Image (cartoon, rainbow, N blue to C red; front, side, top):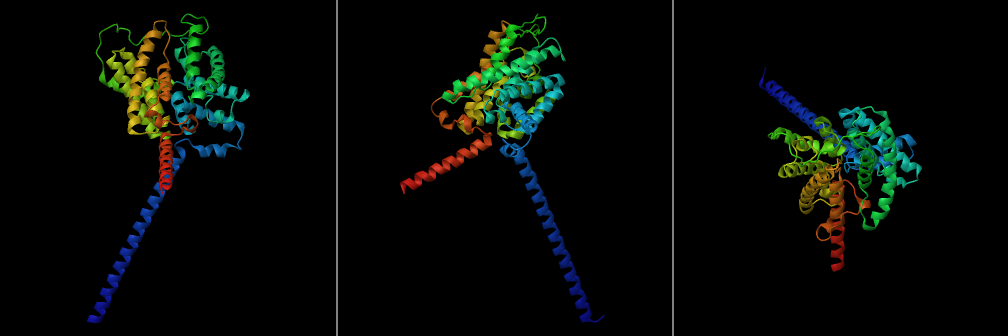
Length: 402
């Protein structure tokens, strides 16, 4: 082989190696683009499933009544925990059936009874579609089942469940008309009123609808037992589950995950508020069972979520107010529970409801972050809307100055 042939062979080898390198680089870039495209599709899919899912309402407009009823029922389920997402509602309902099929059934029937009552009585269609007439009925039915001492699958309990859930619609409508003048939500006032009236009308020895008597959280322990730290920590996520009267860890974590799907910011405040409520319970030396079961934390969770991005735009200032609201709600819950426990009644969520209403009435610096009730969306959406509004105001002031 002469020198010229060797040179040509060397050039062919170099060209082949270069071609292989280019092909490999092209394949790597193509794979990288494919992965990036797949990641974007997954992210876009998750974004479509998070937040208020308003695009689903447009899609459901020309669908059958049954499908619309399912969607607004699932929205009502999430309204209990201050969210508004039908997929989150499906997860929460699954968690309730996981914890107790009987409680899951009662919750489902409560939502349907109150929603259908709202449809029959001609309530505002936008409110019905948003689940605003269903969540109080669900809470009433869940608490009736929780306090009933007749055991699971006691079918006579369905009578007060249907009547109590339907009555919530009338209370919600009347209270909304009254509270609208101050731009306040009716929230869970109907639920708290109905469940107290039901428990007062019946009693532990009632022949048809007996219920458990509630022990005050400040009652002395029968034995001076030591606290179990792991059980106290376990009670923090249980505080989120107790909003639905669910005291099992797995379903409570699923409920927290459903809130995270709707709004990560709201989920963080739910967990933070429950932790604050547990800390408050420790400071007041409440019964260990209240700490372990999450009952000390759920009012704190609700109080923290209300201020931390839902009815107020999220900021460092409102975040601190949310923690203060959680403390206030938890202390008020202990006081009300000790008071009402003397007659065997629960304080339910009266503490968080009253504290949230007071927070919404505050003036001063916090009022500047207040979101009108009709414009409340997921906290991340509220934050984005406020940023756009402030940017628009800044541009308007600059143009005026010029």
